[in-house]
Image (cartoon, rainbow, N blue to C red):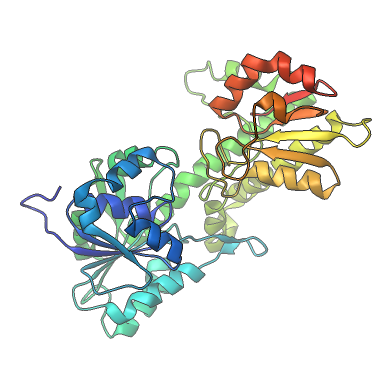
Length: 406
């Protein structure tokens, strides 16, 4: 809640998706007047009716709080405010492998008519370095105001994890980046009203790069694990046992290999670094290639497992990008199924956590007459059912082949 040292402000949040909506809820809970802006009228209507389009029980509970309902409203266009927080997607142009800045541009342009002296603009979207200085500043200054003098601009990259958004947005440390001290202090004051983690101030370019470094670190280490697994398989040994034993070293922590990298951050953000400095991002580039190849390698393993079977029926479980979430963004499991179907294989695709992918009855029912069951994403509920009913599943299959990945 707001304290004697803090100030109630009107805050416009542009983009009410996985990043913007949780921020809007926490800001409203802290006592600010919050206006969520989204071009999707269905999302606007849902927010105004108190319904979340993100499946997070704790966030829905916050939405149900009377103070939040009183402080939060949604609409399709911006309004005058003290603070504008931009949290829109920055996808990768998959052909050019560069950041697609359309949504950041449109969001920035949309607030220009509403800007007035003293306003603070916060960018939470993950972006290539120099975005605040070279991309957003010229757009904002079309208002006739000058960034760093009559306007304040900060980059405060999000740090949340789908499936545990509430805890992460409140407890994680945050980086507050801006070209000038006043902007950093103003942005820090906003986040201090709901963040319990530390707030670290720096310049805007450092903040932009730090966010990319965090996700690239994960990507490079996943690529290393995937390469170790490939080498182990070439040698005919169990890659998971080899990694587990290597991790007995006190200074070694190899990640688990998998079917690829998904989500809106890790498979995209490394390309933003390569975009601004290709000469010094060779390892990053190679790691991206390794991880991007994984769905094709998994699809090849599935093809090999049904080799010799006429018109094989494959059941694939998992459409989310990782276990125990319903988030399908950049899902390698979806890519694997698409690759198999493009080759003419009959694939029944299910995921008990994702709308539109749920099976009827039991997992055993979904596998009746199948030649292969491929567990692509190891949701806890899937593994529990597999372990409990494996005999029934296998007895109903035409060929008793079960592959579990990851």
